[in-house]
Amino acid sequence: MKKPEIVKKMARQSGSTEGQAADRLDLIVREILVSVRQGKETRLPGLGRFLPGSDGKVAFEREKGKRRV
Image (cartoon, rainbow, N blue to C red; front, top):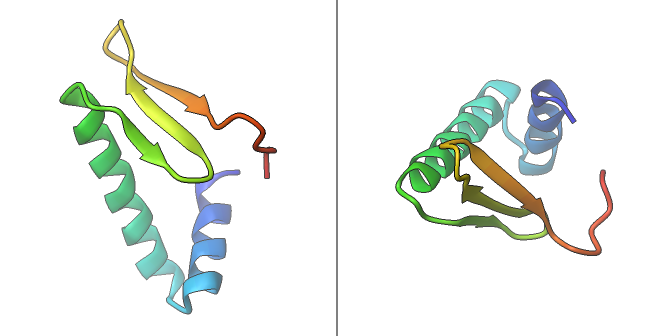
């Protein structure tokens, strides 16, 4: 799923505008990056977890048993 698709779905489910949903998504991504750069694992329930990678990049592990949407 690409950002515009995620934004549309978030807006539809929350009853907000696509602009508001895009701002919220950007905030979530920023919070994840800050946390991981500080060496902390960050989980998104139902999706998986973001981890600091050994090369300074962000690693992602999808939850087991979860299908791709």
